[in-house]
Picture 1 (tube, helix red, strand yellow):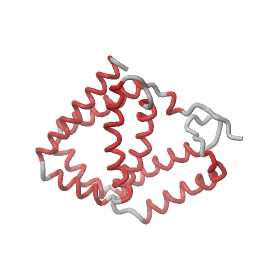
Picture 2 (cartoon, helix red, strand yellow):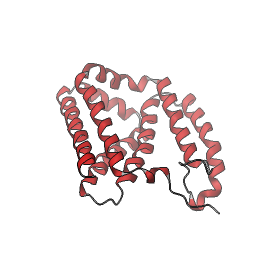
Picture 3 (cartoon, helix red, strand yellow):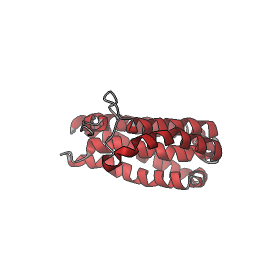
Length: 197
């Protein structure tokens, strides 16, 4: 019988999640504002970065394996309920799928791996904000739901990352507005986390 436990995601408080998320958004968008040329070059060439894609995909599958691995010392293990008997098969499939994708799906591998990473990452702040009292907590899902939608497109159709990055590189005004909006949004989340959450 699988014993219920408090998952590591559920132990993260809303203020902590808000502070971390706010600081990450501020840092990333500050870099985008300070070094627009380098950032655009990185975005437009990311779909060719096979090695980086293989590494990030490996991180994704290690994360999934930790979610699947059933051990008392593992705070990330999750309950699969009626699918608990498939845990072993899924664990075995993790390295196999990583190898197949890394060796046979090299084109646009980084966008696909990034999409998977964002899908795995989103549950952390969303869990911290789930059913909490302050209405301003909605700043977290308001950010993450569009990100999740985009991430699913990158996993299923990774060439869209390349197309969107190419389009963005020809629209400098949209890039600047997006970078400043992201900076302000990150600052707003950080302010709410410190003052209200």
